[in-house]
Amino acid sequence: MKFGPENHSHEERCPQGHSSASTIATIEAALSADPDLDSSSIEIRMLGPVVLLEGYITKPADREKATSLAAMIVGPENVQDRMLSRFPTQ
Image 1 (cartoon, one colour):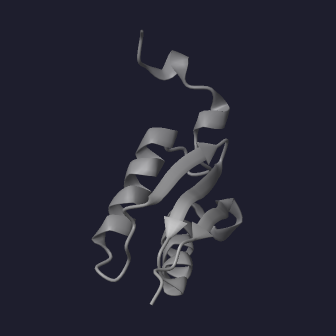
Image 2 (cartoon, one colour; image 1 turned 90 degrees about the horizontal axis):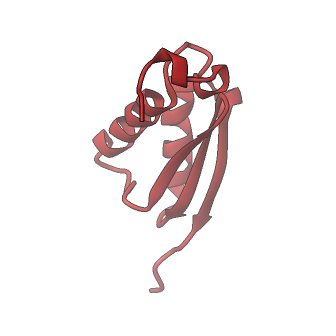
């Protein structure tokens, strides 16, 4: 398998020109750097220029934090929230 510019389609780049892999890595780093956010069950995928946040959140505030952090990187119009709530029973 070859790696290089010839293997990247235009759809694999975000509006700022970054590759999907680097965009995902940047968002993952931002989520994991937030001490108040449990991002262990959040998965990040790209569909063209759109970032898909999938998986589970355990606190209502995590949804807003995760989407806000991703929006700061790719813009709010390029973030789609598909996370499901899984709150611990008390």
